[in-house]
Length: 308
Image (cartoon, rainbow, N blue to C red; front, top):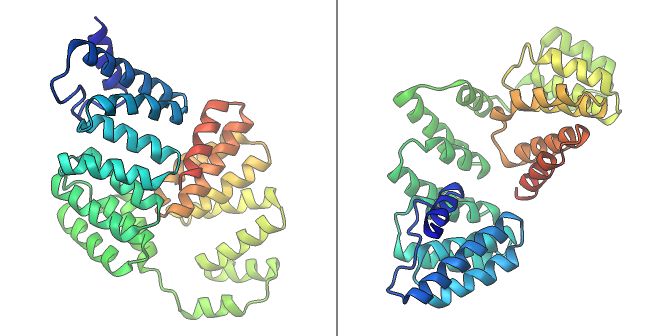
């Protein structure tokens, strides 16, 4: 019965694809100690006691130092502590044992991203794609984070040829192809920072860069009612711009319209393609759920933001 419960918990925490129990022959007593310690590690990790989780995993490691699940769990706990050196040390040992384990490769990529080592993350994602060709969008995001527009566009063209582009990928394509030095941008750069004159110019051109300046000024001036109105109206013209949903959410959070803010965040999160934008979204989610007194979700999004 104990072993059944043990496997159910492992399945729930997502460890089932990894070899779980001791991988070398152990006595019945050692096997029981291994399972007990591993169970304790999962329990402590679930409540955020990463030090205690690592202590329990150390007991497992002493019994079976070549157990992939133990090495993987040790790596994850060090990762949550932002001890990336130890996280990599444990993960590299696991990868030597199972170099094509997609779960290990995904975690290795997460460590590389946390260290902002996008070149390494890109190489790991290519290995993941070799196992699962459907994960090309993740590679696209890494190219964008690495400011590699050329490879991002080449990959987009490949995805477009193979399967077409969904709404999110079309938005990414539009942003990557957006001209950076057209005459309108030159007007913006030299334009006096006056809200009224900016709005007048925007009404004539409906230029997105002008719009961004308008909303930035409204936010800076803490004119949140106007910001909420203008950002929401702009979404009818630019429905795939993550920044507009974020401004609308920001304004509604300040105005204590938390549910409306959440609706904007839900509608816009798929268009948030870079890490900084995602972090701003997660912080806005935190404000919304905090305002709604949903402390569990607020804490979850605050943690997500801190990991970026």
